[in-house]
Length: 334
Image (tube, rainbow, N blue to C red):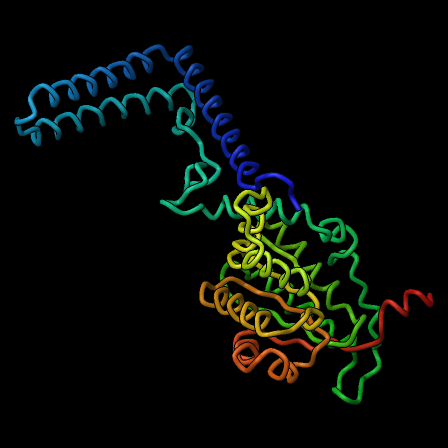
């Protein structure tokens, strides 16, 4: 975990971004002034017009300026048009003197109204993700390193399909999920015995979403519940980790994709069940995708976690059963 304020870390990055863009804008404007002196003269005329109008309104507060305001607007538009023509004739893009923003919603302030902007949340989630243990794993476990040959081609009589053919179908659905992530809201639920590749598959998905600049949070079920416990019971306003824990909780609830690995390995109690329901229900209502992997069969979810949770999984998740040999044992033997 971070040992300093995550907020301040992200805030400094946003402040740096704003300063860099303002510096770039100043350089562009200076370049324009040097190549097109008339542009600068028009800019000074605009400033003088606006300053004069402001003084007039302060000195004569009772005057109706509606007709005058229209004339001023037309005059300003005429000057702006001349400036655009000058830029075009000199080969400059129309927006060359404008301040550029990486995020058009918050204009790189980090705030959308009174709330943190989604881009700020994404940056915080990315820092959390980079500090997690999963980040280096994705370099080894991704679709490029996924090996379908670990799944037998022989038909499993229990299911009437081979593990390999079953996995090919699941891979197709996973890649469709990634390709349509922004247009088709979907949740995924992977179940199967230990060692059949559930976690590897979720790593593959996480890697692709991250490459597409989506905010992804990958937590084991144990770490998820620990985060809920610290957010609920471990608050200490004087502790530097408090903001981290609040931001982690916010990311759990609002990141683009939450991946919960090994559901069922955590300590299950009333708190666990209530917090898990709160999480899944919030994300469903706000159309934030959730991916769950577990060794538990679907029918065991109701017995362990309650009907409310199982009904949401059955109703709102695409459920995939992965079966085959324990790949880790096969690798060890080879």
